[in-house]
Image (cartoon, rainbow, N blue to C red; front, side):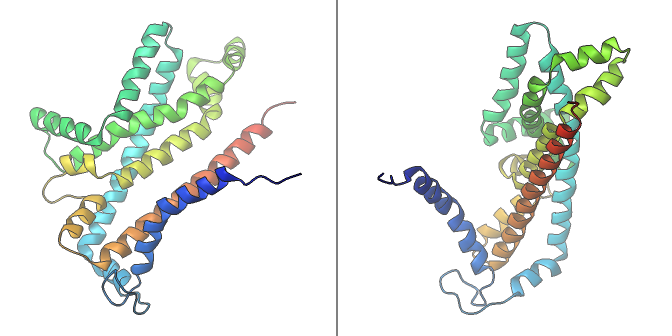
Amino acid sequence: MKKTFNWPAVYLALVFVILYAPIFYLMVYSFNSGGTMYGFESFTWDYYIEVFQDTRLLIIVLNTVIIALLSSLISTVIGVFGALAITYVKRQRNKNTLLSLNNVLIVSPDVIIGASLLILFTFIGIRLGFTSVLLAHIAFSVPIVVIMVLPKLQEMSPTLIDAARDLGASRLDVLTKVILPSITPGIFAGFFMALTYSLDDFAVTFFVTGNGFTTLSVEIYSLARQGISLQINALSTLIFLVTLVLVIGYYFISKKSGAGLGMGVPK
């Protein structure tokens, strides 16, 4: 039998090469002692040392992590209750309206979201800085969490809730002991997606950040405008590695959560 060439695999490999080649190029030259991205001279850690010796940059990193963690936690809580509201609303028309409003925020350009939030914060008198950036990150993270949690709610059998109510469980018991454990993988997925979006966001943050407060994405943009510096490469490499660790961590957590849920189902 004649063996056919696996064109889909070749196409997929080509896509990954196109996507990841610039990232690896940037990472390789973060170790270049020559100070340029045109010819690799010798290996050095100097630019990574500069990153960790830059006190202002470390403060910006701390700001970015705090914003990402706080916005992810708050948006996860809001997103879970938003997904519950969409799932258990009675009228289909209202459900479709809520879903459409949620999806519009996801597909809207970041520039439009950033500009509208800037106008809103200026109108209601919120000073641009930590608070405005936190609120903006919560705003664009909530729809992501909703999208991640909704499929898990739809997969959950309604008979579980009916059985819990028949056994005398209160609404709080149903929520904490039946619904939330069943959708835990979706909650973790929403949290990690919100975390990575917050860490990487530039467009929205650029609009709502103020003097004296900034995040890594905005700082990297400012550094890049000043000219080529391999310190940017080193910083970008560290961000990429942190994001990669988060993705791998989510994979193992979701895998473990799925196995735990499977073991808990009576046979």
